[in-house]
Amino acid sequence: MANPYLEIQGLTKRIGHRILFENISFTVNEREHIGLIAKNGTGKSTLLSIIAGKESDDGGKMVFRNGIKVGYLEQSPTIDAANTQQQGEEFQLLYRQYLTQMKITEEESLRPATQLSGGQVKRIALAKVLAGKPDLLILDEPTNHLDLEMIEWLENTLSHSTMAILMVTHDRYFLDRICSSIIEMDNSRIYPYRGNYSYYLEKRQERIDNMNTEIARANNLYRTELEWMRSTPCARTSKARYRIESFYELEKVAKQRIEERNIRLEMGGTYIGNKIFNMQDVCKSFGNHTILKDFSYNFTRYEKMGIVGNNGTGKSTFVKMLLGLEPHDSGTIDIGETIRFGYYSQQGMTFRDDQKVIDAVRDIAEYIDMGNGEKLSAGQFLQHFLFSPEEQYSYIYKLSGGERRRLYLCTVLMKAPNFLILDEPTNDLDIVTLQILEDYLKSFKGCLIIVSHDRYFMDRVVDHTLVFHGNGEIQDFPGSYSQYRDWKEQSSKQESSKQLPKETKKDAGRTQNRARKLTYNEKREYTQLENDIAQLEAEKKRIEEALCGGTTSVDEITRLSKRLPLLQEELEEKEMRWLELSELA
Image (cartoon, rainbow, N blue to C red; front, side, top):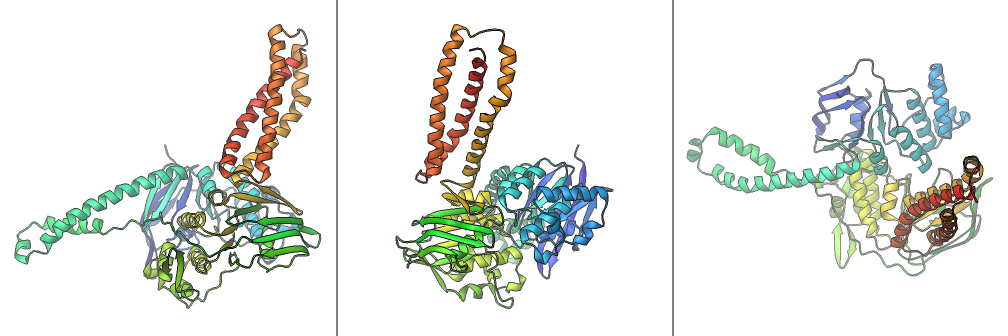
């Protein structure tokens, strides 16, 4: 039987005349991991803040289980070093352990927030909330500003946690691997789904299909009833009041509108020549910290590159050097004459609060060329990125943080660049916007560099990956980040399996089999195993060379990535059997 930690009953929140959500109800049970999904501006962060007691509601109630402890990580947390030093011994021990696991030194944890990076602040805040051992953990965009290593650590920690969790995140892999339930907020209503993100996608589409069918059926009946309602008052007064009341209920259904989210923006693109950019023996350091060391690369037309790596390895510095915003120490960077950069960065968003949304885009261009003679007006383009006509004439100061990010993205794309550089574009954007952006980038007729920690986003868009390992070491991998991670894990297993027989299984096998010799069939098997192992090792070497060679197609990379773990498993089995027989030889 479910054991509720929190019951939300008829909760309502308004901002001025705008209703964020109205009369919503749901329950968070013990050990339940829930993901909250909604468009930017519909009140996700506000709802979490209300539950955490940081903000008031406008109606309804929240019922917490007696004695329950709630932990809350804000989207942009603040930290107070003095506050963490005044808590109990158990907290201090756990807090230091989490800081160590998240690679924060004690000296860094004591610095003022103004002297720390966004990633450091986020990790310290995470350590603090986890060390408090809450029964219910509320997380607002927990992966923002974390690098891939930390995201995967947090993912593993939370997926095995017995805490109840209610989170908002745009990271779909994170959502899929942690959450067992999804709550969708749409048109001020709540739709619960008992499954992970993949299950939610399937069931949500079923809900929309059923609702569209219901709306179509209601529209057909509505036309008939509307004719009756427009008949003379005399005719109407002789009819049952029930039919009149039913008409207005039918009208509500018929006038519903399901937002079409499968929008594709096919861009014709601006002309781009054969010469994109060439880097030759480029070096860059900050004191003793090396970013690039004799780095050379020739970027080709229509290339879509992803850049990943831990915080501080130089990813953002790399793209700033391409854009001429950061000087390099030595070497050459040669940019093609036809290149028109479009740059989206975390620090580049500057708007006037007293300006309207539509005017911020019109200041750049009234129209955007979609190719094939088709043009979209600024308003039409904004609609593609989910700004309704009413929202376009709203003032910018009324926008949420995610809506501002969405507007900033539109201003970058309206400049019609042929080379897009997006530095952490997924932070603060909702999943719906990310899906639209992904489709836009997949059909983008130009070059693309994405710096991101969003694994799902990268897997859908990029065709190869630069991995920044730090200290100037950069690896060019011909595939997505997930393919790189699979390859890396298999390489690690290979190294472990080479060590294991020498140190463990050899001694065990010698003790168990010392008393007898190989039979005739075992001798034949032993010989065959040697041949099989040699062939498998040769195949494995060919696959690894192909994956790292830089000339393999994406389809072939996918096929080889699937073959590699199967091959490795077969190789390990044959090696273990060979080892057993070798002790009798």
